[in-house]
Length: 134
Image 1 (cartoon, rainbow, N blue to C red):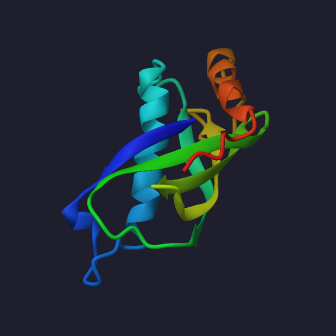
Image 2: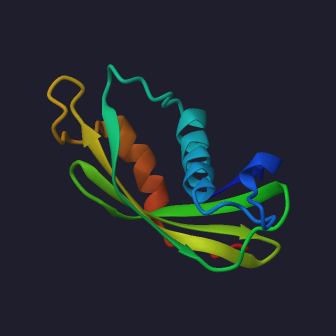
């Protein structure tokens, strides 16, 4: 799956490149857009999602404003967790890659909880091999 996210002027640092901390926001926006379009508006009464791990490998800086692609997939879908892989790409260049581990939490206990069936069904769309777009 690939989602496009706009890089804004305020995402750039003094060197004119996307600031390292902004990559996490760009990736979050892309993954959120995917889920929202599929009818999952992040309603906290139905479950909570926690980021357990987030790694970013910086490859080539993004040096301009405008759209970048965030290609993402699920490497592993567990009972209550999902391990996403991702790449931030534009014009055939991989700017960053890494992984993001999410945990489904019960909204009352805030303990890990199984993915609801409807969530799991959509997540399984992402468990296919990435398309390696750029």
